[in-house]
Structures are given as C-alpha cells and as structure tokens.
Image (cartoon, rainbow, N blue to C red; front, top):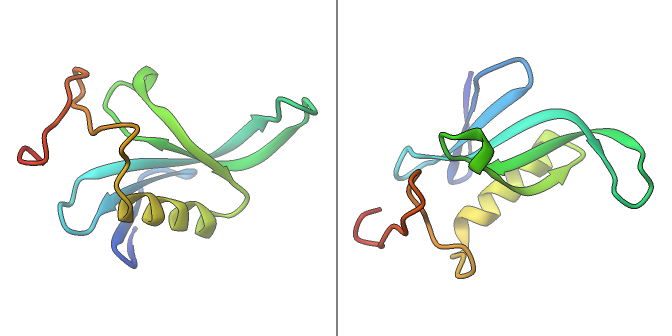
Length: 103
C-alpha cells in the first residue's frame, strides 16, 4: 500500500514494516518498523515505531528515532528529509561519501 504524505511516499512492505521514499528522487531514505524497544533508564519494554536510516545492509543502519504513533514517525522522516544534515553526510552502501552532484 502506497500513500503520499507531504513530500514523502510511505510504502507498507510488511505487516509491521514501512519504507519512506523521497517524493522527488523516489529513493528509499528510512525504514519504519513497529516492535519492542527497551528504555535504557527504566529497563521497561514498550512497543514503538523505530525509524532507521535505510541502507541495504541491516547492520549498517542507524536510528533516526523512536515514536509512539506511525504518523509521528512519518512526520519525523519528512522533517529529516526537509533539512540538510551536516553531521552525517549521505553515504553509499560501501561507506563512501556521496557528493551532491551524485544524488
């Protein structure tokens, strides 16, 4: 199921997994997965929407954040796509930095 929310497209690819694509480039940027997460301060387990920066190799993904609702997770992705990230440059799956011309 594909739905468009603002400047992003959200594609449900599993029962609890969504991919977030940039509307302009049709490139996958984030993966949203609904599942358990443990709070480090209280050690309680909660069901949340975890948003990861998407790369092909699962072990190389890093989290964008954890959200209580799917809508909040999608909004977080849209916000992240709308602002440049100077701390983490865009990288290819092999780890090399992608220049703006290559995007």
